[in-house]
Image (cartoon, rainbow, N blue to C red; front, side, top):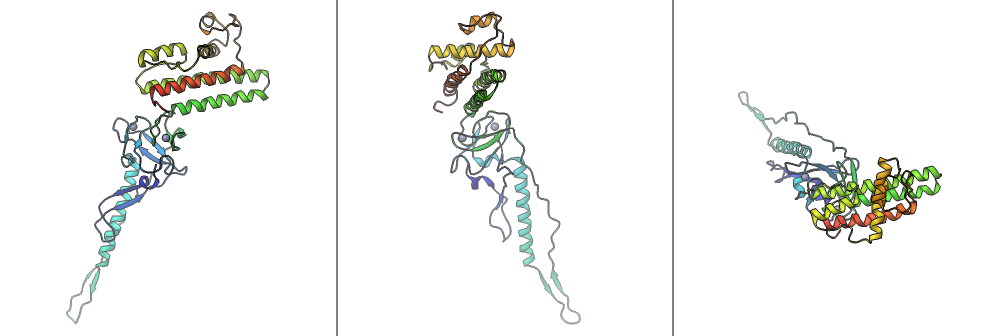
Length: 322
Ligand SMILES: [Zn+2]
Ligand SMILES: [Zn+2]
């Protein structure tokens, strides 16, 4: 986002000699370098922040991260910014008019015993206050890995205000990286802690994929859950006509399904194997009533497989060539 184009609001035609035909008001960024933005769409009016100077160089349309509306960056000023700019412009205007009138002051002293003096004094009434404002605190900060824009939004998911790419895949990959770090920590942990970390990493992978998949489908007005991987694959095929697992082998698919079934046991059955798991997970070492085993290598491999599924889903649904 071009810094200079964004930070200025030109407003109010000037009347005095001290002003040209417009007043320029500089908007300041907040202490973290962000400038607030507001979607102009009446049903949305979503508030977000961007960092001028990051992202696409040169003029580019602004995209609302929440509803996807795109338009001229000049239409994305917040109500607070407009009120501030108007108050500053009004102050500049009245100051200029005052200076112009002040220059016309005159005083003719009375002459002779019966002379009448004429004078004009120009005084200024108390100035109208400047409407200062603070930008709001938001919940998620993102640096777009496509265009480099630094932005902040409510919630987690959104479209990049500069290049318009949806951040869901980027956030999915970030969550997988965190799960990978958990797995690295197991090297220096004792047995119980290592098991806890591995199982937690596995649960995080599934939750992240579920959140990602739901969000991507919601963008296309479909409500599909992804904790049951096989069910989600069928639903996406039915609704959107493509298979997000068409880029992986059947062995990899079986492993992904098993990973998701293990997570189901860990989240809902204290990790104890039941009949449903035996039917669905295709796990040759599983015995009903025993605790499910999750290996570190298995989780690492699953991350790679599920990432491929995520990339395919993202390309098929939102951005054909991310
Ligand atoms: Zn919007
Ligand atoms: Zn971007």
